[in-house]
Image (cartoon, rainbow, N blue to C red):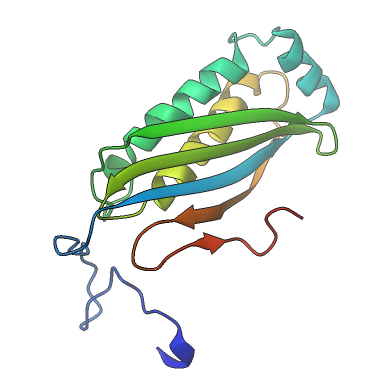
Length: 166
């Protein structure tokens, strides 16, 4: 591509999708953090905070679902490599300005390929689980803002979303 932009790594010269060969890459510590949110009615947030959702502990269940999802990323995204993650953390915080819940997930490993997709998958499934757990009270909830915040390690080096920290 022109302008120094990298090409699409999962597309070969003939335009076919393929898995990237990471065999010759150097193992480094790789960390990625992603975020997203679930906007909901203030009453729904109150219900979750009080632990009165019909399906039970929304926050605890959603956190566990996100961690489990990160570990299954290669089964969900066709060209992702199966990875031996060393850590996945999911943080869920109230945000009265939405109103709703903000989700942040961090994935880590020492390996030959990055963990961006694992962090993004953790956030996505955490948000979906929040929706599922609270939909009886609020079907109008909105999932959004899912993005990579930052990543480190590997040949391409560090990345920080331009709006992260604003």
